Length: 260
Length: 239
Image (cartoon, rainbow over all chains, first blue to last red; front, top):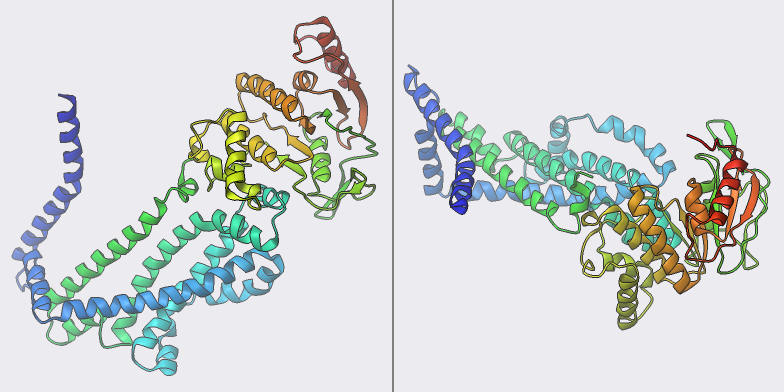
């Protein structure tokens, strides 16, 4: 008897967000039907738009293009910003030296770099990757600096107590201690990267999901494709985020996220 | 020992002259903030004295060393390692078989069998402290320096842990310097109690506890020694 009710409750809980979305979709469809000039499509229109894209082979092409740029820009930023940030966070003098530059460059939106990106790299993949790199670099640096500085001194002292060399201290104490913070930073920064790529593609390149949206509107007010593009962007963003979250579940990292 | 911070200098320790014998259990007893932890940190090599010298076995202490392992009050164990990983932390230079043997030995000694693969966040406070002691002992140090290791535990667990520590000490006979603010704890555990004054701390008195283990905490001699220290510190006898 008990098992049945818990199974039913679990199913009900899982269905709730689905039900909620279904209600929103119905409201959307109703709202569209009432509109006199039918500018924006309803949910069926969007699905039709997606089907269109798939039929013309554009969907895969654009998704791959966007993901390619995000991957390159993000990975480059990670490889450069994390070690640099960890080092800067560890040596107070380095932080004092670099902090003013960081604080000035950080608030400049990567999109403001578009003219320079196009000047340096022309219209194409490199410009987009550069913009994504910029959008990720500063947040990652700050995450790494902050992560090092919030390592409890106890861990470092204990590591030194056991006679670890500086190198051993870094990879046996420092690195494991910062990983949970880094993962949170990586997750947030990946979200930023995904935002930047869409915006960058609207201006600086001629393929990808951002371009798809702009092109769909310019080439004949195909708002069904616009919304289809937005939906796909949202779904991929969700998947990327879920992927990062699964890193947090690794047992050796979980200590950083418990309610301690 | 003088600390400089924000332009103000704080005189923390003054004129400390202390000798600790091999295999002895010495307690540094004093009110909070008196500087006993500073003294312990200096003994471990985390701080250098502004004047004077600390020597272990004739050698001056300049930096932390695995021969003098420090046990912290809390959050001392590495949360990203299992119980086994923590205990084996200082044993990386050993061969695998030897290492596993030692880890098993100390897991058993501190009573954490069955929890070898557990992470610290799955352990209680008392278990975490036991883990830290095991990790400290595994590298076979000359000295253990314990900084109020039971301070974050509830009083029942504290009593149990004192017994455990003494049991381990009698088995391994390491030199132990133990910092506490708890008078009973000091008299229950130590061979000698170094009573320290408030900041800047000086040594008020060194009390020899001449009762054999296991100590009866209701025996007249125990109460006599304990009350003596009460008086030394200037505490009222009635609450």
